[in-house]
Each structure stands twice: as structure tokens, then as C-alpha cells.
Image (cartoon, rainbow, N blue to C red; front, side, top):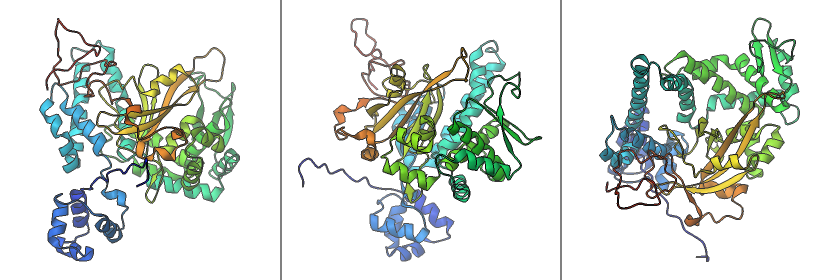
Length: 485
């Protein structure tokens, strides 16, 4: 073995439930499938009951037999699903600390039941907030704010559940991009011509056309006149994005309607926000067509600033598009994407990985996405480890937006893009870093209330469900020393 080379252990793949459901959906008996795979029925039975892992030869034959990608049998959601279950069982009202030990088994063995449990708990929390609003909490603003955010949270969950990749919409956008000849530097012109075929005219939004009741308007579409008004201070990339969104509604309204018909969207506002999200998804996929963008990202080694310059869009837009590169048989690096403000409020989150974003309030202050506010405009890179020993490479930077006039307040966010360390060597940001040095990773967590990392000096809250080692004759550097489980 060459010196310095590290051989990583290959994890065993147990996918009995997914295999059994796939077989039953195709109307095959165990004996029939075993014959097609050239294995014994008893061996197949053991695989379906997770007594035996999938071997590579059997996995390849299954993919060929059923016409699915190998990723179908991978445990996509297990890591973040485990974290979500732990949040549920950590709830003081409905949870149980003892159940946390069973979270992994539930997520791996019964993922659909686990997701139903998480969804049920979420609805329970919403009901509690609504009840508080209607009773003794009527005078408090907190429940009102929480309820107002529910539709946005549901819309975010829609994309989160789909790993931020919508195949039908992505393929449709790529077809249109090929048809109209989308290419960097000519996007606004070709989009304007395409919109004109639908009778839509693009008009500048100035003092004469702006509405007095909304002075900060960036765009407005008037169905009666079929005019799309765009604010003059928008950069070409921003103009193109607004135009592409309008084209999504003009050409794929039925598909967007079909995709947004999701039973987990509980209110008309949540459906509308999801439709907006789908139109925005189409716009990004149109301006940055999948195959072209994927090839360019690989060539530039996922250099976000180079990609932004190449496609004429912003840093955040590139980050978001990078988090969608999960087309079967042409996958990019699986990224997680986040956008936060200075107060730690999370306004965007999506993940093609197992990374979990907490719902219990507050993320980790050791995360470089918060450090970015101290170095505006500078790209920060961090190798971080989670409590379960999984490690991620995170890239973070601030983005600032202004309303286009002096004296008016703008808005500043920090955006972060992260991937599992297994994929980090494909990124330009890994240059000069020892990705195998676990001691070099910054220990972070998903949120203080559910993070079980002992001895963290940055804790803002104690871990829910664990007793504290409170002793008036003793103090520790960590603010919340944990007692015996």
C-alpha cells in the first residue's frame, strides 16, 4: 500500500424495505425475482429482512432489472431523519429521552413511519401555537409571528423532502433553454423574444409606472395588459431571473399546478408559496441549464465566484443552483444550502445530503456561516464535524442587497454551501487542506437544544431531556455540564 494512503471502510447497504416494495409494485414474487437475479429465494428473503446487506453484483443486477439508479437503494434521508426524530422525542411534552436511543433504528427500518411521526409532531406544535393565540396568549406577538411563518416553512419543506431537485421542471427548463438558445451574455434578449411570443411586453419600472403603495417594487406583472415591469436598478442577471419566472408561468402553469398539489401543504398560502418556489426553480434551471451548468461546475471545480461571473448571476443564485444538481446518472456534488441573517434567522434551507437543519430554534454559533458577517464579501471555508462524527466542508459568504436609492435600508445575509467531506476533494476550496485530519475539523452541531455534544463552551441552551450536573461547589468552562444520562 502506498505510504500515506488511507483505505476507507465501505459501508454495508441494507435496503430490504425499499427492495420489497419495489418488487411488490412490479407484481413479482420472491421466487420470481430470485430467478431473475440468479440468487436463491432464501438469500433474497434475507436481503429483504435486512439480515444480509446488498452486495455490489446483486445491486447492479437489481438496477438493470428494475431500471433504477443505484442511489434508489441508498439511505438518502437517514442522517437528517434521525436528527428530526430526536427533536420530536426531545420535546418535553410528548417526548421521551429514552426514545432517542431508538431514533436510528426507527429511521433505518421504518422511514415512512418515522416521517409520519415527524409530520404529526409538527402539526401538533402548530396546533399548540394556534391555541395559544386564541386563549391566554392573545396579547403576545410571538405566536402570531410563528403562525405567519408556517406557510413559508411548509414551502421550504416541500423542496427539502425532494432533496431540492424537481426532475420534471428541470428537464422542461433545459428543453426550453436549448430551443431558444440560452447562453451567457444573451439571456435577457432571448427571454424577451420568448415572452413576446406569449404577448408579454417587458417594460421598465420607473417613477411614472411605479405604484405609490409599494415604492420598493422590483417587478410587477399585469395580466390584463400582459406587461412585465422590471425595476431599473436590477442587474442583468436579476432581470433575466424575473423574466424566466414569468416564462415559467406562461408555459408551464399546468405542470407547476400539478407539482404543487401536495397533500402536506395545508393552506392556500403554502400552495401559493410553493408555486412561486417552483417558478423560481424553473427560472434558475433555464438560465443555468443542467448539463451546461453541471459541466461548467465540474470544470471550475465548483468555484462559486467563477460560476457567478460565467453565467452572469449572483453568488447566492449559484449556491442555490449547485444544491439542485441531483439528476440521476448525472449528479453533481450533493450540497446543503442555507441563508441566515445576523440574528440567526434561517430564511432559506435546502439539502441534497443528510445534513439536518434544526426546527427547535438556533443553529450552531461555531458555524462559519455566522463568522461571515465579520468579514463581509469574503469567502470563508470551514471543515466541520457533527456530533455523529460526519464531517462537512462549508463555504460561506455574505450577500447584500439594496433597494436602489440612497438612504433606504438594505438587507444583508450570509449564505452557506456545504458538502460531505467525501466529495470535498472535487472542490477548489479543499486545496491545501488535509481532509483526513479529524482534529482539524471544527466541532459544530444542529442546534443547542438537540445537540448532544458534551462540554461545548458555546452552548446557549442545555440539551433537552438531559439532567444537568449542577453543583454549587463546582464550576466548569462549559456553561451547561451534563449529568448522568
